Image 1 (cartoon, rainbow, N blue to C red):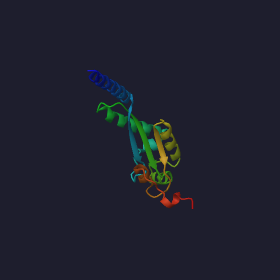
Image 2 (image 1 turned 120 degrees about the vertical axis):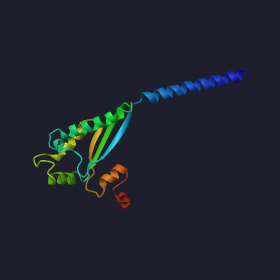
Image 3 (image 1 turned 45 degrees about the horizontal axis):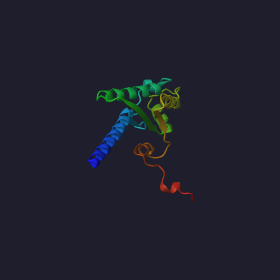
Amino acid sequence: MSSDLERERDANRKLQSENKEFQMLKSRRAFVVVLIDADADDYMFREEFLNHPDGGQKAADEIAARIEDHMASDGNDIDVVIRAFANLKGLKTGVLKRGKMGVHVNPERFVQSFSQRSGMFDFVDVGDAKEGVDHKIRGKSTLEPSAYSAD
């Protein structure tokens, strides 16, 4: 009889512990991470954003709002983390060449205002490494293994 009582106490303690753990997990906010290939041939940001002094912020706001709307339709309350990746030098050349950004506009300002919009938003210059954006999004290094050695 005492062993039955002991098993019941152990089961009750385990259940209470699992309930506390569940409540802690439940109280954590969910988030979604959005990875953007901003190096795409048909540049994804609208001209009105590219040519506005705070266009990066406006672009970040619109992306976040669309994602939040989509997730809310499923009944989810989430935070949005946005990471946009591009070869900034190549991007600057491309948007100027296609006339999507005026010559008086500073593309670096667009990138800065995008990143400054929220602590959860970043626009990352991956440099001019071949397939740099693809490697960044896939989580792979753009450097050859020999580049890491101290030879």
